[in-house]
Amino acid sequence: MALEKYLLTPREKEIVKLLLAGKDTSQITEELIISYNTLKTHLKNIYKKTDTSGQLNLILLVWKETQ
Image (cartoon, rainbow, N blue to C red; front, side, top):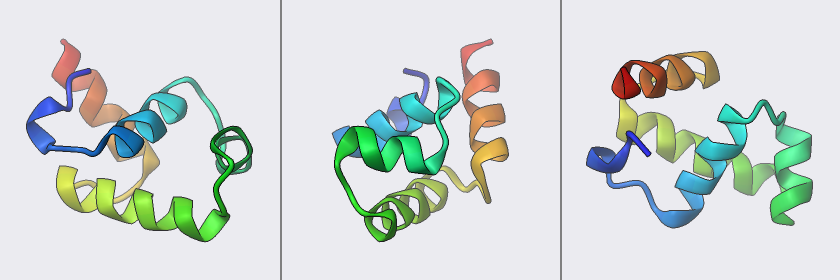
C-alpha cells in the first residue's frame, strides 16, 4: 500500500483498504466486528497521521501516492 510512510497500524491499514474497496462505515464495523466508536477512533488517527480531513481526501491521497 502507498501509505507505508505514514506508519499506520495493521488495523488502520485494513480500514483504509476497506474504504478503498468502497465499504461504508456500517459494512466496515460489521466485517471487522468493531463498534462504530472504535471505527471513528481509528479514522481519526488515520486522518491525523496522513494529514487528511475525511474519507474522500484519504482516498485521493492514496490514489496520488500510487501514481
